Image (cartoon, rainbow, N blue to C red; front, side, top):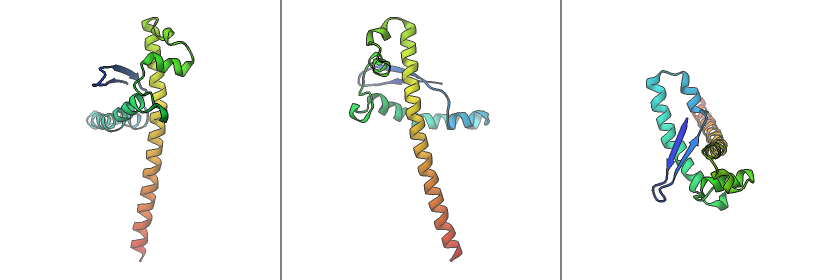
Length: 134
């Protein structure tokens, strides 16, 4: 899956290569009429806002603060930024590398959200059972 992120204020375009994980992988065996809307909702509500935060968020919190792709790849690999602009192949590899790095961030956020949801559902179920027992 490819996420093309366009920032309106700077007119930069970043293409992130993402591998289907979580909800996207689970819905792949579902009927198309159900999996396509779920994937679209997941993209709109989860992936796009997190990609915006990842690419434009403050550097002090571990995000990229609008850095150019070659600067990001230079930081991730300790290779000079000029290396990542040499050819189309290195640019594509740079975007792939950023996508992999973003994917790990996305997995972390998904896992935290699922843990919170599980905690809340157990807490809610316990409260409901206590009311039924009384």
